[in-house]
Length: 527
Image 1: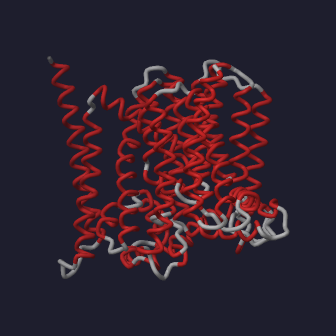
Image 2: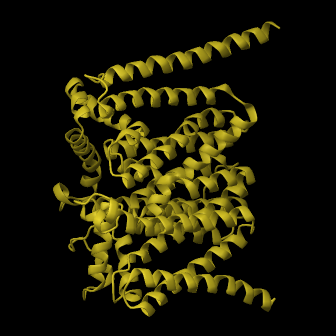
């Protein structure tokens, strides 16, 4: 037994210490300080992943998932720190510093500054301090790491490493929860989506908070699943820890997570009884989350306003502002707004946001090659996922047990409400929409897996029809974008003409499919 433990430690220590030495040598500063910092994070992180791997079943597939989850994110983060300064936008200080996101650059830069100030770390949560993190959790974590692990130089890769390891932890919890609830087939698909989904990989390779939120939600999901099946007190620890993490990093997502997971758990329970203590805890967490969300957004025009005032006015005001910014940055959006009545501007940008990142735009956009490549990969990821998210309603509608079916429909509804809210909030922005959507990647992956397994089992033609509708949308918009960027048309078609053509072609596919099914069913009835 001792020998096995020793060998396991060697399998972790040797790669961790070796990789730490390489990262420290490449990242600059005093080598031994960097080596100690990277070694500590790698040994702790890899040990945690090894323990989670054994806890979740110690399967080869899961082991490969965890390995790739870390490798892809850490590798892309390191690659971007070299590629973006050389081939990114030369007039962008964010790109020149090796960051993929403005938020990551602002927060990480301020964390390094705060780490060398006399102020305590909790200053990150103080609104009087002009911080770039609305809620302070990510800024505080980064400050802690820089202050105590990297005092000599700004090692931005430390935060990327923590993000990559955190994302892998989420994969392990998701595998365990999905496997326990729906079996291996679902767990395999959900796990690979979490590992490979391009938006998740990009965010996990940056100093962003989304990888932490995805993992917090998977831990909450496992806590609920464990409580429903075993009623162990340990499940409450998982739930409490995940909710505290969400409150510190992004309290708004705690409300959505509680509504989504709580409703799902209640609908699929047999007696549908919830003790009064959990109800009080849930209400307390939601109230705290709403207060923190209001305080976090009390900036700019809302400085000094009460949390309730901020919450009731912030989202509509932000949506209007983002729609305005979108129209200013895009000539064809300005043309659309000139032809649309004012009240339809925000609904249009919300619908447009669901299509972001738009694959035809990414293909024909004359951007520098790193960002064009990233846009294409993000688009491919979303357009591979969204038809299965749409078809998942058909799949869950066929679930035979009533309570389970209602739980699935609730999960589908809350997921799509979040997608719409993300688009409404981001105003059609091609970067913020994917970033907000990906917070609930676990639920999207579960629904997509359900739809795929249903299609594989039933060979239902509606899945093919939805894919055909998506193909029509992409083909028509590809023609339109190629005429704009390729200059092969004297006057590009009006976007309303393209939209009308898409609606007609899609309508023919869907109505034709319905007629085909009706005639087939009628013929079978006569026979």
